[in-house]
Image (cartoon, rainbow, N blue to C red; front, side, top):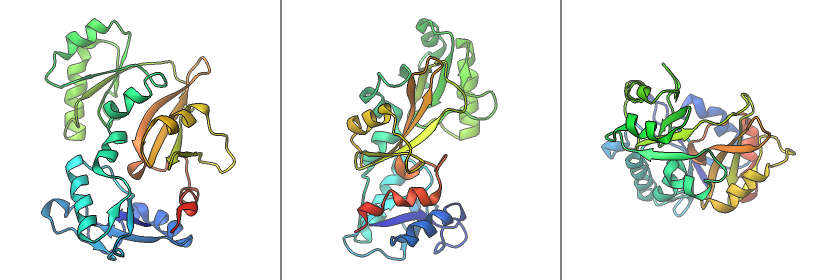
Length: 263
């Protein structure tokens, strides 16, 4: 196994500074790491450095990238004679909300999906909800007016702001029912080969995370869990583990997840 990180923008043979600590921790337990220029993917000239061993398996750890760029990343790995841990289809299985939602709809807030070409104000009015959480298939709006609205008439403003601040709407729109969550209770877990891990080594794994590990067919993904005011735990996000930040985790703890799979 080898980990593949984004390279520095100005030095394509050096890791992006954001990931240098993860690189150090993974190397400390015996893993090899390489870098790749994400900026050069679309040109077809993006090379992996150092070159991986033929037949080795690479795990990407880096920024979220579009499906097209992920395909180019996979091609670059294959051109180097290696293979990826997570295929493009597997990446989208956990990266795009509509793909994982049907598998755990009872564990997460009710969600409906729309195109930006739909009559969104009318659609929201017909739901009869008191408030709406708006995001695209991947991210919500964390700047400007935010992602929660109380009136259907505000949907146009949210979409416009998403396009302004994010640059584009990825996939389509997800409208999620707002539940009474307790702030500051959100916790990120990782699932590796169907085994869930918590940020602390001896921390108890919530049952809802164990259930996600059983239902979702991915070798490596993240599960974000929050506590509702009535004491019930709910899943607020599933993500591809390769592009999930280490929220609440140390780089050392993250590296230890892979120790048992070191080949």
